[in-house]
Image (cartoon, rainbow, N blue to C red):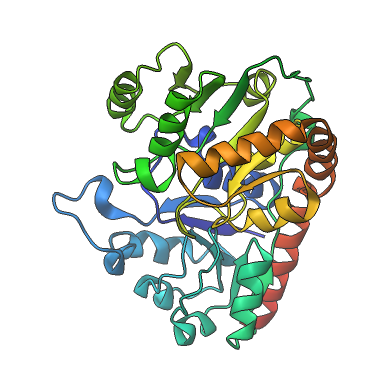
Length: 338
């Protein structure tokens, strides 16, 4: 099998730290194939809208289609990219952030060979709207990369934040501003942010404005995530609305695999799993007050949440299960396209 993978984001500065790039690298190891970036704005002198994504790559895609079996496109939301209708091989469209309550262009989606979503919310919504070509593919992590290092509570709560903003607006929508405001109010809170090379000066300015240099660390480098997780009590991932981050963020799956509970916004579909299993706390709003309530719940139930995190992380999100699920989707797509 030979798959041509497509990403609609700009090429990340640190691909090994970017979740979708990591997932595609895993699938390339299992199935082979190359990666193409459909976003032209890395080199365009003017901003080009999403409707035009991929057309600058069409001649290259045409050449590659002679040697591939199918296309696999990753995008956060169900945007109807015109370029996908021009592809001559079966198209698997992975909606990495799932589907919100707003009904997407169902006619467009129904014409694609297969659609994958990572969460039950999105799967039920799309099926309920009548789409038949939808597949649920749960995210997976390599549990063997992680070990559990207990971090006892000693009057300090150390949280890892590993979903950095891509834009200035995301300082608010991804909860960075709320976390800094919360930490400024609570001297028992320490934060470690894993950064991606974007907006680092802006982040440093915000940390300084809150006078948090002693309790907030910003790491803008590729790191051993397991080693970082060994130093924290839990990982937090916030979003004000659905679609801002992956439905099952890798940072939270990594945290569970290392036995560290998670704090996750209600808007992120993974909150359903957290609420059901008790492997962390659901944060009801992106605000200092809601974060504080969630942290207090974490502290009150920390021992039990750690035990649950180890079990859920190692058993429920297997990397091999994810690979096997995509293999089944690929096979189904090839049968439809035959």
